[in-house]
Structures are given as structure tokens and as C-alpha cells.
Length: 584
Image 1: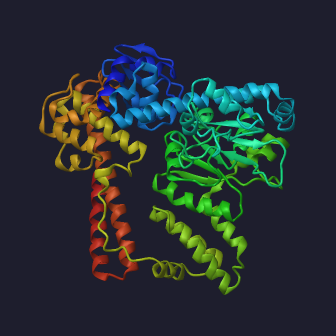
Image 2 (image 1 turned 120 degrees about the horizontal axis):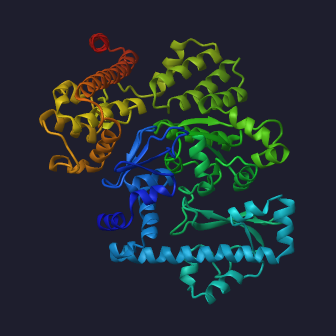
Image 3 (image 1 turned 45 degrees about the horizontal axis):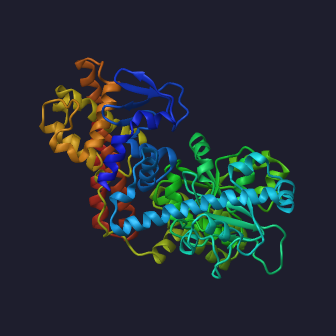
């Protein structure tokens, strides 16, 4: 893997790859342009050809050629490597094991078969009057949207596609690998409108196919089964067409049906995708999180929709996603129907999305008579189960109070019910926030990175990096650089020292940041700027410690551990003094 990565890196200039997405202008040894991740008007996105590194000051994101493609295309590392390898003309199978090479060849042939199938289905559509009438007149799709989504038609003959692919040199096994044949060896899709399922780069990995006329015993939709390319637990329909709009709007709307996605895109609302029904998975959310931290769900308000929303809430909470719910107005059964009526109503519904937990609680409140004791019991059990899945203690507290208000119960009784239905956690040791960096806000991360960037090029500020200051940095990369500048008194120029080779990419990002922002500052200004940054870093670290102690205090109070409560209160008092001292 490392050899193939370096071969790709050697063949592609980072400025050329980034330049396909960002208009770059020369700025000394570097290039700069407008951030592709925010709507900034002043260029703060830098690329260093020398270091093969990019950094975006507006979002505090940065990295190498692979991390850029991962961010801008919403891919994982393997997807970015494969994407760049194709661009560089590198055959990744040469770097894989024998089994890996065989799998790579099978995947390559499956991609080729599926791409040919998509072309074949489109040509078949143009030859079939019934299909043309259904797609363009009944469904109301435009030529542009049909072309963009590569919509086609599978002929009704039993082996039309299989025969076509056979003549193109594809074996029965290769056709099966692509998921295009049924168990009898004939075409899986027959007499249906076909919609390709594409990966994040726009490559076809499967199909969903709708019957043209509803029949009693025929399924309305048929989908590609699990294959070496298609996994419904990971696939996000419409992502390749929506990713640019998602980045620009900084939000994504997830709907249930593929046709909902297509209708929305045709109407100009393009930050819309779909998952396989309502089966939201961590893989779906992780794929979308690379593009935005705001997800709006538009699922039905039936039991399946509520259950899907409940499953999504803890997944989103764990990774810091802002999850809201879109409710369709009136009698519209899905976004497609609403859009046909008035696209402005669809846009308005998206804008009125409410927090997911509020929506679920409201749904349960409607279904139970919360004026009765039994209704209150059922409602609070269901609602507290959802609230208990939240990872943030303050958020849980907010909803516990809301549930108490809705049921006209005391907050004490609600919390007592929480205690009865959950195991005490007061004895569970705390995770050290400073080691992970997961709880850093974007501003906090920027303060830490800026302080380290100055320190790498100016050894006169190294005396500011005391033990307490170094301990306040989060993440292995920052900790390592902080310890280095605290013990060394020499600047880093272009070559990462041996002690930091494990953190080479991060060091290069800091050097690019320092070059772009602090190189022209004088020693006096850099010193006082570093002191200011470190005060903020230390104060934020103490605040995070205080939040952890407060969480333990709530747990100790729930467990009625008086000795631990006294000890934790003393810790909070001491931390408050440190915060006050740090602000002076």
C-alpha cells in the first residue's frame, strides 16, 4: 500500500490535482485560491508544491494530495488512492498480494461490464416508445436529468443484456460478479426503467430498476444484490451528483426514494441523496460527514420512519453530526409528489427542519395519551430511551427537562426513572480528552496549530512552552510537536527532523501555515502572539477538564456518593481559579 501511495504521489503534482477544483494563483513559492469548503471571498487556501501539502485557513483543514481528494470528493482513503491512481496511470494491482490482484481484476471487469450495461440500457430506451413515454411524459423527466443520472431501459427479452455482454467478451462469472444476471443465467432486469447506482466518483456499481406499469405480483423496484462493488449499507445514492451542492450549502438532505433524489435535482435542489430505504448506517453517515456536519432526514412519520430516525440519532451524536428532520406539509406522501406540486414547498420544508430528538419526542407524544398515568409511563420510557443514546450530557439534561414539562412530572422523578433503567457509571474512569483531540472545536484546534506553527520557525518563543502548556495540546501530532519545541531551540526549515518523521504531514502543514501567515512578522509580534495563543490553549484545556469533572459530579450525585461529590466539588473550585487566573 505504501509503495503504491508513493508512486501515485510521485506522478502527480498536488497543485495540478487541486487546480482541477480550485482556481490557484502563484503566491511566492506557494499557490493560493478560494477555499472549496467555504463561501469565503478572500483567498485563504494555500498549496505548497515543495512540501506537497495544502492548507485551508478558513476551515483549518489540511493535508496531502490524498486527504484533499478525500475531503473534496467525500471518499475514504482507498477510494482516493484508486481515484488518483487512475489519474496517474498507476496499476494498483501490481502492488497487491496475489489475492488482492485477483480481486482488483474482478472489480475492474465488473466496472467495465456495468458501464457497458448503462450505455446499453440508454440505447435501448431510445428504441422503445413505451419507455420514452413513461420516462419523459409520465415521470416528467428532462433530457438533461436523464443524461446526468444515465437513466435507461432494460429490454423485456430474457437475455438481451447477457447476450450483448457475452459478445463483448465477458464470461458468465464476470456478468455475475457485476450483479447483472439472475439465478437462471438470464437478465436480472427486464422491461424496467433502469437507474444506475454510482459510487462517489460517478462510476456505476449497480442498478435499481422500476417496472413501467404496476402489476399485482411484480415488485415495483428491483435492485442489484450485494456484489464485489455494491454494498447497500455503504452506498449513498446521488452522492456523485450532489457532493458539490452539499459542500456549498454545508448540509445534506437524505430521502427514502431514488426518484425523490432525481426529482429534487431536476427542480434545482441538488444537495439531496438517498440511502437504501430507511436503513441508515454508520457507514452512510461517515461518507456524508466528509462533506458536511449537517444532515436533514426526510423519512416517513410511520413506525419504520421513526425507528430509522431513532437508529440514526446515536450514530450522528457520536460523530458530532447536527441531525434534523424534514416534515412534508399537507398530504404529500414523498418529496417527489411535493415537488411536482410546488418546488418552493419542498425548499420551505427543508428550511423548517427540526432537531431529530424533538421530532421523535413529538411523534411519541402524539401516539400516547400523556394525560393518563399509563400514557405517561409508555411515553417517558420510549422518549428517555432515545435521549439516553445521546453522547452529550448537557443535551441529555435539556431533553430530560423537556420530557418532565410535557408529562407535568418533576425533573427528579424523570431522573429517577433514568437511574432505574440504566447502570451506574460513576466508577467508570474518564477518557483523557487531551490525548484524542475529538472534543476540540474548530477555533480551539486553530489556536493550537497557530501556536505550534510560530514555534517551528521562531525558537525565541520556545520558552513559552512550559509543561502545563505542552500538556494542554490535544492529539498525538500536536503533543509530539509541542514536546519537540519545548526541548529543542532551533527552527525547522524544509526538512522534518528525525524525532518528528512519524508526524511529517502535520509538520509540513504547520510550516505552510507559518510561511503563509507568520513569516513576515517581527520577533516581538510573534512572541506576544504566541503568548496569547497559548493562554487560550491552556484555558480551553482547563475548561474541558472542568466539563469532565462536572459530568462525573452528575454521575456521583445519581449514585449518592457523598465522598466523591465533595472531592469533585473541590476539583471544580480549583479549576475555576485556574480559569480566572488564566484570563488575567
